[in-house]
Amino acid sequence: MDDRENSLQTARRIVSQRLESLQRAGVEQIGRAAFVPLPVAESMVGTAHPTTAVAEADALAGHTTLTPALSQGEREYMPPPLPESLTSTSTMPRSPARPVAPASDLPLSLTQPYPKGLANSVAGRQQLLDDMNTEVRGCTLCKELACTRTQTVFGVGHAKPRVVFFGEAPGADEDRQGEPFVGRAGQLLTKIIEACGWARSDVYIMNVLKCRPPDNRNPLPNETDNCRQYFVRQFEILRPEYIVCVGTIPAQALLETDVSVGKLRGKFHRYRDSTVLVTYHPSYLLRNPSAKKYVWDDMQMLLKEMGLPVPGK
Image 1 (spheres, rainbow, N blue to C red):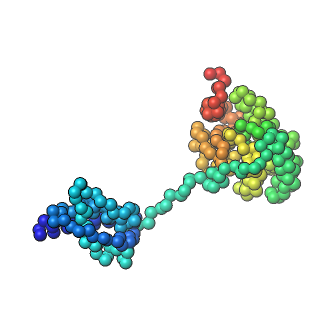
Image 2: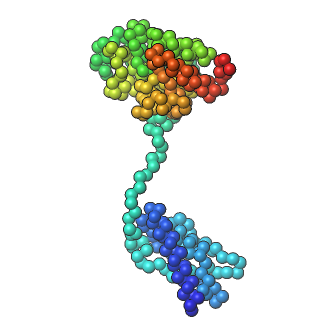
Image 3: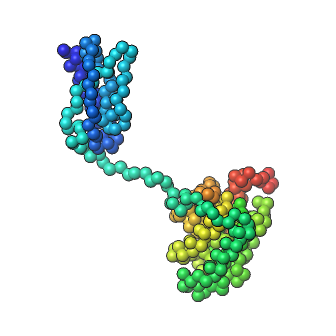
């Protein structure tokens, strides 16, 4: 009788420890398992199986069903039912609340794929872009920009590109000519593109804003929000393999983050089905020529990722 009592105490202790472990893990309530005792062989009296007790605790938490865990010739030993305080009629002491990790660290607009069914030919995509350009010319969402612009600056380049260069906003030269990146910064961007072995006509070039901000100031948050519908639709039509964000404004607008360029560059990011590279804006390089080597490092990393030869190596 003493051996059997010791075995029962051992089984209860194992179950109790398992329940405490589940409680620490955040399980607050368990249901009553259906106990179906089997005949206990005389030879099994006092030999409760620890693995059976652990399986029983798992079953109480809804993790598994009770299964025999005995050596050949043994029958399962079933300890008596647990006290009522540990069954479904009672709730365990509440554990401290723990934050639940989101399904994704990225906003939905970054993770959802590009829509299907859009034109896939160069001519078809170009027609969609032209139609959208006509719509943008009539946009007056940003009252100040609509009143001060000479014209909107939509985007230029190949309608089915592998790479899109994504900038901030038109400047004075762009506002006058209606084409992005044609001033001093644009000339430097062209040199960067050509250093990679491409021509401007091989890539697509566009900005966050389609209108020049007065005095070339930074875009206001509401202006970026107003233009988001346009650059998102441009990317949906272009569906590039790679996007190069040049500068803080395009990087933060596309990736929906407030992280600085210095922390975003040097690694790849994702926007829908596109791989995104962040680097410094050409206008920054004009003011800080020493940063040119960082941009070239970024472009070499992009070429390697694309499986293209790196000029000069």
